Amino acid sequence: MKNIILKAFALILALCMVVVPLVSCNNNEDPDTTDSTTAATTESKPDSSLEMKIYLLNGTTALGASKLISDTKAGKAGMNYKIETFAAADAITGAIVSGECAIAALPTNAAANLYKKSAGKVQLLAINTLGVLYLLNNGEEISDFNSLKGKTIYLPGAGSNPEFITAALIKANGLSESDITLDTTTYPSPDALATAVSAGQVSLAVLPEPKVTVVRNNNQNVQVAMDFTAEWEKIYGENTMAQGCLVVNTQFAKDHPLEVAKFLDDYKASVEYIAAASDDAINMIVDAGILPAAGVAKKALPNCNICFIEGKDMKNAISVFYAKLYESNNKSIAAIPDDGFYYSR
View (cartoon, rainbow, N blue to C red):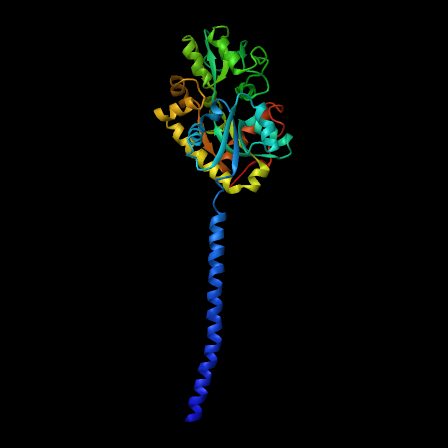
């Protein structure tokens, strides 16, 4: 009996010697587990101190960012955004390729060209503007594209979306450019053409919003003959006329995916707020210097088609647009972009 008790005691003692180190090991691992969990949580947050330069093209492509601009100026953005606006895309393209800025707003044809010419140093983040082009008429009888035969349409400069979209629509409606004269040289910019239309010097012109609203405020005889977005969607489907977009420096996107994702969330919220067209939103547009007056902003905004489309929806929509532009004129974009062009978070 005594031997049995001694053997049982020895067995219990042996078990204790095994269990205690295991418990001790588990206790020692807890701090490491906690530390790694804390580190993972910290790493999953964007770095709010990282400077992100955002260059916007003044006009419709910058409209959706008005609240983000306002929040940034007021110190409410929660991120270290540095936002600047420019009058011409040429001032932006070099900066986004070199990495001087992280994100930029550009016309969609310029974005595709830049991707090709830079060998992939930029990527498409989001579509931010759908169709904003309108055919303006002063004194002409225009009912459809056939009624444009033999006439001259003035366009704001050569080599831009207005020229390529107008040409594509003419072709899609069974006409050729020999049927209609497209003048892209007389007025090299939207401002120059808008001034001429306001003064009654031009009877047919293609202009984007908000220039359309400004012109019609200046000259009551000017009418909208066609909404090119509606004409395009009749043929190619909804949301396929994408004129403005956001691009990101490819290396920046690789190095800072969390910060890019935070920007996209902030930008989307800004677009939704501005699109609601409250008085506060209108004031933000004017304060940002994107449109000159509240009256113009309020009238123009509903026709500016600002939006936020990313990911697969972005690719599906803009792929159609690029294909039709290229089909109409292979000089419209350097090439139809491959899959590497499309950023997805």
